[in-house]
Each structure stands twice: as C-alpha cells, then as structure tokens.
Length: 469
Image (cartoon, rainbow, N blue to C red; front, side, top):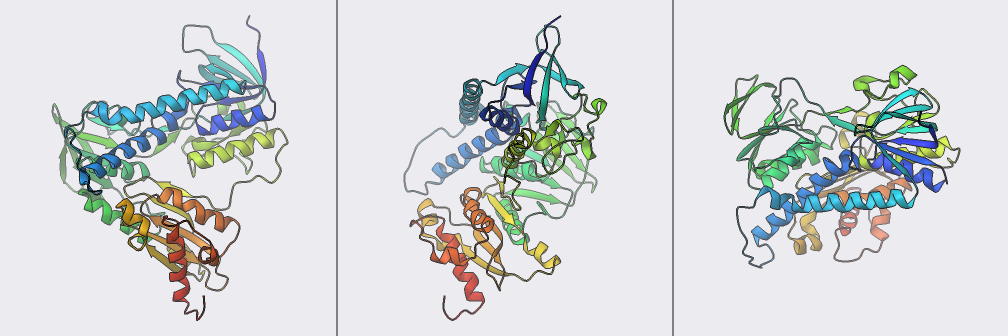
C-alpha cells in the first residue's frame, strides 16, 4: 500500500485563489501541495475566462483602431481574418502565463498533483490520477478549496460546440459567426456582445430584465446601452427564450416567448455560473453547502469544519479574480495564526471589459438615495481631457459621488478609456477616507487620463457654490 504523504496545507484548484493560497503558505515555510483536476494549470481564469476573453478583446480593439485610421496612418492588411489569427495573441498569453505559474510553483517548492480529489475525512484526501494509475491518499492539517465555477448549461439549450456554445467553449469556435445571438446580458454576455460587434458581426443580446447590469449606477448603465446600440448590437430586453432550433447546417432560430424568432448562425448561452463543489465529498465530511452549492464560510473564509477553508467563485459573490486572491491570502494567514490587520476591504473595485469598459467602487446614486444619504456629484467628460484626444478615445465620463458636508468620496463610477485601471486611484483615496480636495491639490502628470479626477472634483465643488476652491 502506498505511503500517505502529509502536508501542512493542501490547495484544491490552481486558479487565482488556489495559486495565491499556495504561494502564501510557501512564504510561511509550510509544506504545500496543490491539486489540479486538469493537466493544465491556471483554472478557468487563465484558460477559458478572464485572461483569454480580455486578450481577444485587446486584439479586436487594436484591429478596429487600425481600420479606423484614427491616427492618420494608412496600413494595408487582409480584411478576412481567420479565427486562428484572431486567437493567436490569446493563445500566446495563456502559454506564457501558464509557464510562469509552473515556474513559480516549482521555485516555491509547491508539490503539484494532478487528479480528481475527494475528501474521505476532514484531514484525508483521495486523488484519482487522470491516467490509469491507482488512486492514492494524502493527509493535511489544513485545506483551501478553490475549485472555481463552471457555466450554467440549461436543459433547453442544445449545446453542440458547433452552433451553440457556453462561455467556456465559445473561445474554441472554428469559424467566425455571420450573426450571433447571446442569451444573457450579465457581465459575460455584455463583454462578448461588444467583442463580436467590434469585429463587425451582427449581435442580438437577450436579457430577461429591462435593465442590463442593474448593480451599476444608472447613468453609467444607460451610457453603456447607448454605446452598445451604437455598435449595432440589437438589445432584446425583458425577453425570455422559449427554444433554440437548428434549421440548417449553419442556421439557428432562437424563439422567444413573445413569439419573436431571431435567425442567426451562432448562439452563446451566458446564463450564469455554478460552483464546482460537487463530487468533492464535502457534505459527507460535514461541510455545509448553501444556495447553488456554494460553500458557506465565515469572515475568515473558514467552512463549517475549522481546518477547511474556501475562496473564490466557490463561495459566491463577488466572484472576481481580484477578490479571490485576497480571500485566499486571509484564509491561509488565519489557518496558520499569522493574520494581523488583513481583512477584506469595505469597498472593492469592479471592472467590466465591455467596449468601452466600465468600472465602479462604492455606492451608486440609487443606493445612496434609497438609504437617504445626502450626496453631490462631480463629473468629468473624457472629451474635456487632452489625453483622450491624443488616444482618439473621447467618449465616456468619470463620476464622483461625495458627501456635501465632509467632501468624503462615497462612490466612483467610470465608463470610458482605461476605466478598469483608472478606478484604482479613486479606490485608494476612498480607502484612506480622503476627500475630493485630494484630486484638486494633487499633481498629475499631464497629459494623462488621471486628470479627469481633478476636472470631476472641480465640477463637484462648483455645484456646492464654493466661493474659493
């Protein structure tokens, strides 16, 4: 019988949360194993989610910029690009990032084990290798479960990976669609709608609600809808899908309950995601699962079993790569009694890689109004900023919400160029309880997009009728 190897910490899953947990434990000089079901490392984030979709978006945006000749330079290139050409950069980035991850795990002496894991007890894990080898067991003091999530695949969708795809398989499409129907107007659906539209492909976007991305500030979401319609994305709001039918080799009909029929060549179903918590044996060892099989955890990301922790998509909202890494770090530090002042921030930034991108941190106008919290607004239109004219990207706004008495920032909302990176300056000032006066007195390199914060701050103070700024 094979000897049972013992580890201080076993991490299940190699996405952002799993990688962070393994690295943090290694820095604490712990004996760490990372278990990954697949032969590749990096999880959904690297292979089918965040990294590939954003890499494809970058390719498409740059291609569109060249075609527009907005910088006055004429470049001849072939018009009918193949899928392989469009996906080249995506594949290159994935390969580089996976190689870097493998090197880091090796350098930090993390044992990487491939196979299907299943808990036999809170301290014992069985791993069934992907090859024909016999299952074996490893033991541990602590474990961090970071197995992520998978696309929800509703029964009414006839997935065939030729005409009907989910958000994982759409990146394997062999031929660009003539026209695509996207079912689901959440973050993933909106991002892919913009990517395909930027390629010049006609897009139908179906949403059950009348409002897309309702958690956004309404002014920002309305701005996004306007931009999406301008890209010839047809928005089907307040609609439910009745059926998806294949009527020809490359012809699909999406039938709506309102009796509309939407012909297209390709269907992408972006109907949310499900936690990958099943088949791990969690309930048998006493781990509580909540709604949609999400693992229930406390503020330290500890499950109902004190030596088992969970982080990332597996525990639900917000399900971001950025927050997953913080959750995993807190979990490991708590497990080994190294937690000091670390905690999840009160507010964290959201980024949505639509075209144009959207980012936010803090409260929206609607939330502040509902809570009866007084606020004032400061807005900068990007067309006022020199840097956007240089970039040929003048559309969008940066919006500050602040307390009219203390001038402390209550929320920052951006739609426009580099929004997902610009948001961090506002987030930092919020975190340290700064006021909008910071942006007026700060020295910004010029010309930069960050100058929009100063313009928005002056706009906000002008609304208060300050005699002197």
